[in-house]
Image 1 (tube, helix red, strand yellow):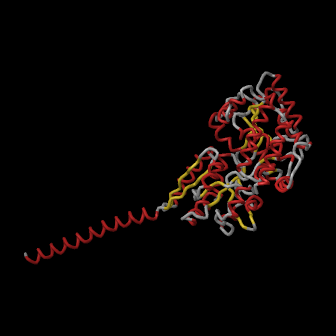
Image 2 (tube, helix red, strand yellow):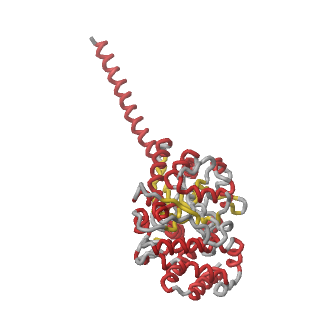
Image 3 (cartoon, one colour):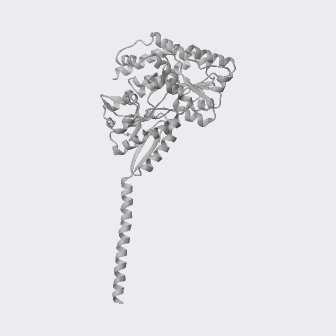
Length: 419
């Protein structure tokens, strides 16, 4: 009996120690789990792509349970990012565009992590990825390119027996035909300066190459008396009689919805707007044709550049985890999901354009008949871009070519002086 009592006591002691050790182990596991969960902020202004990013983040987190990605997106992301960087509040991962002044400035100040030798960079088409080169090094990675074209309502074009215009004069003539038929030729969101600049920069980009902007950044240029600038500005004004009467009270969401509902025949916009338009009307019968900026179809180029491209903060506490996330985004299968959702032209090798509406633009981009956003070359970066938008909106209101060009000449001079 005594022996049994001793054995029982011993067994109870062993079980007690075992259960205690299990509890401690569970506590330790929880502590380790909490300690090893690394949080990264993924910051961008691509509101229209927030949903697909969230889906990709959830997939990534399933494969990487030790990492938590916070999907932070805000309107005017580039402007907000500039403010955050100025106050030292830099997100771990954020959208960045190659070539542009802000990107080069951040590289030179040591704000961005060097990604040159990362294996996932090799998955990007070199002619696109190489735009991130600064002094032989890369500090960003491209996922997609955007492209601007003219969205058009196929039903209206069919009804009026219209062909896709290939020249500027044909574009104006088609708008005149549509107006005479009692329909709205062109929709514009002139309440939003960004929307105005998307239209205007098509004309600017097709007239002035990167060498011209190098000159503008280095020396005084006579913009006010330049025949090319005058012609481009006059073209901008040519379209206004064909725009809906309330254009200066309409923002981009209203116009996307109006186009989706068949209230206008055409809308000049980039591929990034397609998810919103299709959400308003999944059955919309539409297409996109290249913007006919000149009267020579062979010299017309598609305006576009890297759209979803990412950098990592040099000060992130989790650089390896951040690189793991970028490597995941640019995997071919994930890049394909992004392209299918957004209609963007992928920068990733092996991704196919499946959205029929974008095929015409995609074809020209593949032929390298594409011009980069002019504002990416400007000194002043985001600040100069914001100014250009403001002056463009004012120009659409007062329609004074001389005043517009004088404002632009003064703007470029101010950024030269502030270098």
